[in-house]
Image (cartoon, rainbow, N blue to C red; front, side, top):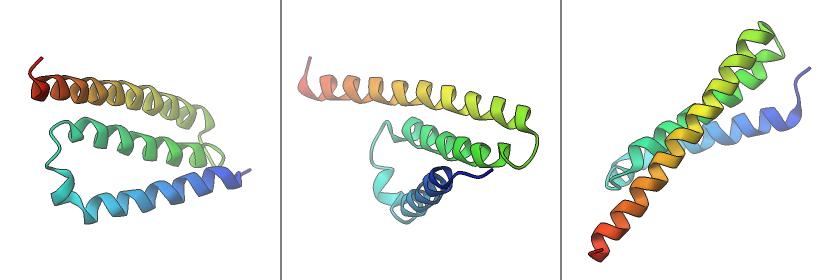
Length: 93
C-alpha cells in the first residue's frame, strides 16, 4: 500500500529537481556541487524505489533503495569534505 508521506517526498524531490535544472548555470559556479547534486539524484531515485517497492518486485526495489541511500550518504560526505577543504584553502590555512 502506498503511503502518503512517501508520495509527498517524491513530489517535493521532483520539484527541487526542476529548480535545479532552472538554476543550473548559477549552481555550476560552486566547485563541489557535482557530488552534492549526485547525492540528491540518488535520494530522488531512492524515493522512487520506495514507492515502487509497494507495487512490484519488493525485494529488488528494497535493495536498490538501500544502495541509493548509502551511496547518497557517501557523496554527501564527500561534498561536505570538499566544502571544508575549499573554505580552508580560501582562508589560507
